[in-house]
Length: 127
Picture 1 (cartoon, one colour):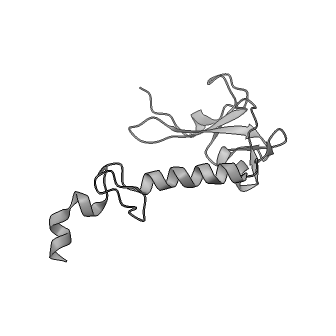
Picture 2: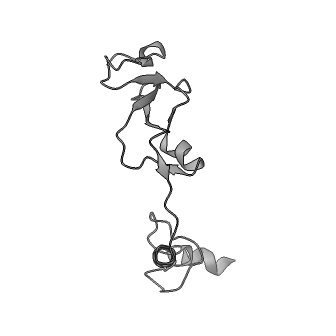
Picture 3: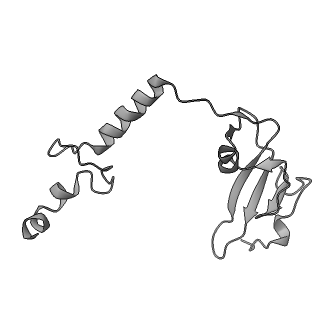
């Protein structure tokens, strides 16, 4: 596979990649990523991807970030009391250890599948 250079990433007409493509940090001001929209209190709101950013990397596929039109973005929906309850229940489930059944006080690492106390009992006795 041919290595992508920074100059290859500039395709504002979309002839090469199918959608307008810009090098990393060189997009027009009227386009923003999801994260940039969120900082402004906006969301894409169902619009299609307007363009993309490409960042070449050595020995790997280039990083891509999709861009959306700022003027078509909608405000972020506010959290309702029901959504807050659902979020709290979800976080409670992620903190509960399946081995001992206690609330660990932190989100249990998925790599362990249980709280640190249950995963490493021999180290807890030494301390």
